[in-house]
Image: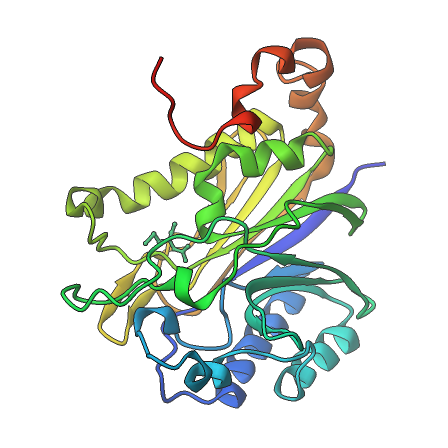
Length: 307
Ligand code: CDT
């Protein structure tokens, strides 16, 4: 019996600061319905899919930004999305800002099964950007001010008849993210992102944003024999241009679907989970070929140590 999951990657165009959550949730529901009509089992939304990418502004009092965070999920305003998905029998993955009862702030993604049950919550591990206001920048990327890095790491859960993991945006640039999930037999990794085209610390990378996005997800997929679904919030949002190019990558490393616009756009693919074994039982048979005894530096140290 084949294990095919029909997956939709629901890219979003810009969300402005003045856009209400209600309006955004209606956009998500429209994409969800489109995915359902196209026969999708699962639809994946981007990182921080309910609001504008607010870490681009710095405020002295962080509590002024509490309205960007969700204190619970489903939150009152996202209930219509959860209800519609359950009614249609389609699963989804949604990125949002989470504010816990203890006052912790996480960049979070939730996975919901076709029956409406919550499979898992993932909190972003690699938090990029800066902690403090940098007023000379054209825009801030103060994620390290707004979010605590998760200590929970990368889990893999049984869902949709497969082994599913999650990561968020900058996590996709780190090979360890994929490998930790690969070592748990992951077959499908879901990843939302917001990637500004202009990289202020080194603008020579601007022209390479699309290349790097594909490079990391294609290599992560291939080297771990897993499907990877990367979903952008792209386009010109509050003056900052962000990468689209959402894509679905096969365990071979091949891109099987890619967004053409930087707007709300659904792409989809019929993803055969049994394709993973063609890599994980041959070239990337970890148990047979890996050499963890010579990789100890990977967990023993963080930065470069010169000998
Ligand atoms: N959201 C996010 O993690 N974005 C980063 C931007 C580069 S770091 C300023 C990314 O890795 O795409």
